[in-house]
Amino acid sequence: MTLEELEKRLINIRKEEEVTFKMLKDRGLSSDTISNIHEGKEYKLSSLFKYLDALMYVIEVNGVTVSDIKGFGNLLRIMRQNKNLSLAQVQAQLGWTPRQVIAIEKGRGYTRNSLLKYTSLIEVNYELESVFDLPSDIRENLYKDIDDIESL
Image 1 (cartoon, rainbow, N blue to C red):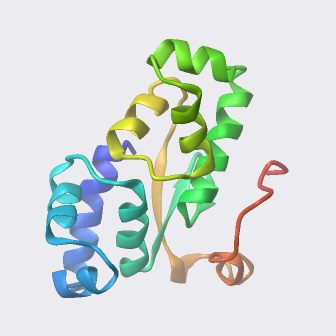
Image 2: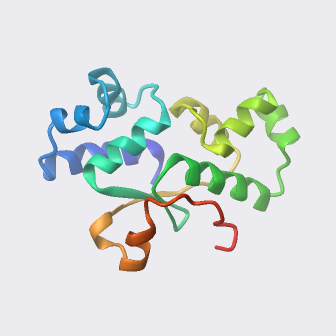
């Protein structure tokens, strides 16, 4: 599914699981951020991971389970490299500085719109997975730092 489809699915999951706006706010999400996620407007990607955490869901990106923004950025870097795109090529195609590309690939404070631009260069498919549906070995390691997923 696309990012837009994922956002719509999150709304349905929130309603099905009866997760209130107060519960989302308790995870550090503002009313504006919650609305922006629901409406497909600009928000920080770290907010999406807080939202997912409140719902007890994770994202699968091209079949790889990702539970935090750092692991997501690392996976995007690997996907870019697998597509034989250099940093210079990404910078040129998007009109970005090296700092902007590296920020995404290190999981440092990027936004929905910058993610959409970046992923326009690589094929990305998102899926949502309940934490409770994951195998126990994956579930146990979900919230640890993901430093080396290159072997996947």
